[in-house]
Image (tube, rainbow over all chains, first blue to last red; front, side, top):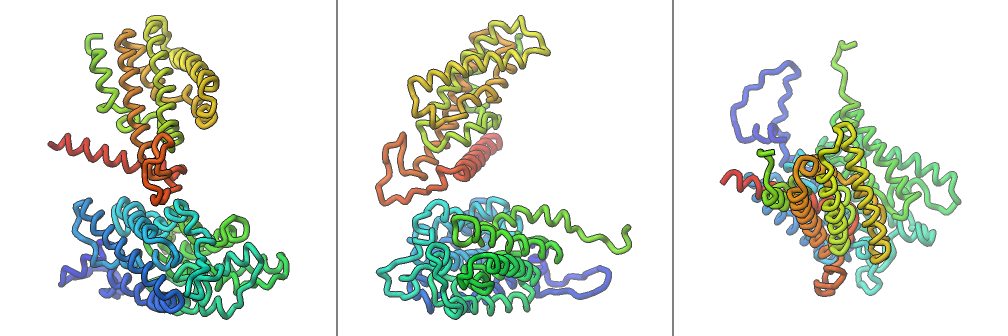
Length: 325
Length: 203
């Protein structure tokens, strides 16, 4: 990451290298991060539309927490400030979008400090972290404050915002077998973590990322394939309750995770084949957690588990140089 | 024996400069496992201290009879004797605590702090040096356990020794009482200790 970044500052660079002579000067950490932010725009817009004040509040808390944590921890390491690479903003937004709107203020702050501090800076900063920072922060608060972040914590019956007063689709299905109509899952008018509800917004943002090549297509494809296969099997073998493959894909945070969380270039494998394996493994774990664990959703733990396997996948998938026997 | 540290040096070394947990990284299994409450941590440190003191003195007294190839066996058997005493005493008088600590009391037998002290001090120096070394190392172990337990219990349950110290608005960080909390707390404290040590060396 550092090497790429430096090319911005040092103006005349002469590259001596074999062909193809395609120097992508546009690639920098900051450009990638801004791209992710642009891709997150529809998700954020949809969450503001559906959750209104809740989403605004959560975004403000998580952004303030992430930026403050980045500022403090990087200063503690005695390194130049990394605020302008925008990675803290991305972590903050993804974190906010992965929390329920009803979570109290301290949850966002603690999650942001854990995400940036323990998830990233302690490993040596961006590019060195083993685990997706936002998911480290979220896992920490998820286990700490089970009351606020378990499925029942998403609901506030008193709330004037429609979405918040309902049960989340994943939980309604898991606990009571209630199937939410596909249209609401697709548009995102249901309850859930702020950014996960709208499949449409996640798809729009995700496609932008893939077209810009900021995110590699292999990860979402692998992930969604696994979810579709296992979801299909579960649908065929399970009771005919109307929860189809599309419900599995549009419901919960599969799409948000597939495009915005699993694709983090730092914590996913380097080679295309490795990325496919990574995506597929994440999808298998998501479905395993959904179908066989006490949690209604498993994207966060699935991504963290696969992050841990990334170095191993990288080692297995070293490309053979052409001509080697 | 002239180059061996004196009894007082052994004592001081054990508490901070050669703290068994933070400087030698020994005995980490109980350090991580029983530090979710200060009461458990103190009990554990007490049990280890008792076993360490008794084992060190006995080994020191018989150090001239030890055969090099059998010494580890003798260490272990001596330690096991006192662990059994400690285990039965706890079960008799502190039944609940004995249940809480579960297998970690019998596991003191393989606690590397004790075997290390038997090897380094008791098998080479007299009973006075061995005893003061045992007390110093136990204090160091107790301090290390307590430092982790204080953080974990306060953050995790808002209490100390089971008595609520933080106002009830404090949201308990459940994770701090679970294994991840142990690793995170210990890692961060270890980093802080190393940072201080480095600064002192540099100064």
